[in-house]
Image (cartoon, rainbow, N blue to C red; front, side, top):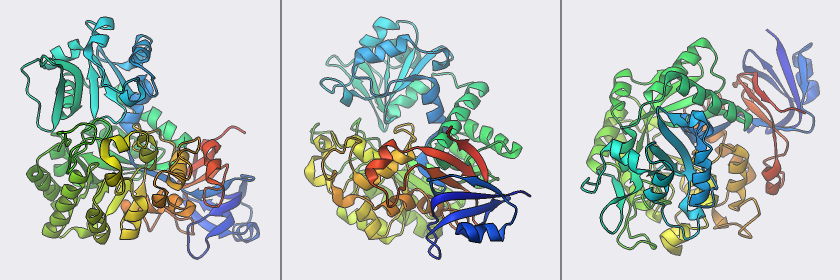
Length: 529
């Protein structure tokens, strides 16, 4: 079996015995030697050498909360990110490629009314004027609201007298007519009327997502709520040996597919593992669906949505814990986080499953006492640095200054004892791990605003940020004995960067490049020189 030696200016190993090196040797998918160039060459004489020049090599970067099928769909349908107005959205829709259709439905994602003049939600009338008979379904950037036209509402059977579903809102005008904006569980009513993607469409989307992940330097992804059809495709590719990245999948726990996952139980292949389940406690802050203890500052009387009753969430969590699944629950608002901590702590106690490393996904807005509870229990806080820098222009309008003291509070969570695992939540954010490292360190946008950072006391150091994308996800997926470090015996997952993410200036991460992505000793991406 051929041995390959990689040479670089610096290799951050994150191994306490040897924090950094200049060379590492790979054989049969594992690291077999780490050290100086002379030491490694002497230990594996005659090996093939790859000189990465001035690059910095780090352990495999893993996105601890993301959505592969969602990314694939975003890459192949109409992209509405950063559209500055409703008119700009409509223009993009008129230029939609054929891949944007699922059946005869036109799909797009990424709109954000906060980017538009006035910041108001859109309505169906604008879509109806352009698309009177084609159903249109456009998900908001956070995927917790959808904008649809009259034909989509008609096919879903939503009319003036339709009640809001539990955990959802059908926005209405002054006459009580649906406006075309659906929040959280109301989206499901329309999606149920949509034809599912074909197998070929699903495969195209997943391949596009995996290719993009490799290009941005990801060696692994924790998929937060995988539907059964996507899981079956990835199982096939894993059995064929064609799955290029490591996927730690969380079963989709919201819908009826959860019964199939419960029957199957935890599953593990070569590059694909499913031993977790994902539930959603509430919605998102941007669409005012995050469940708060007190009213939204910019919408008095509104406190967000719980997407299922506390009793149902307790019952589902206990059922999956008893089956041996790690339970991961989406919680954005402080009321949702209080509930999720109650569910995870009581459920783990009742089922004797504290060792399953249950997770709070997002852990975005917490009361101080709940930060302490989460940390004391040693739960995983799966957080997304770029959410803070995306939300900071308008988050204070939603929450007020006082509640922001417990929002996006990464250092406070870490100090309390939580296990931080960092991610992006793509496609809600870009799957750009360099952007995540930058946001974690600076809490600023790419132009360096605000000066000094937004609540800078919650920023992470360069090493802590790197550990959040390496050792953190490894521990959160029970892989710390094999991944998260570069040492003999570890899996040969690593990434070469054009900058040093630990000791180099944080600003350099904005224009940095991924030079190579290696998974199990195989180069799945190499930048063109």
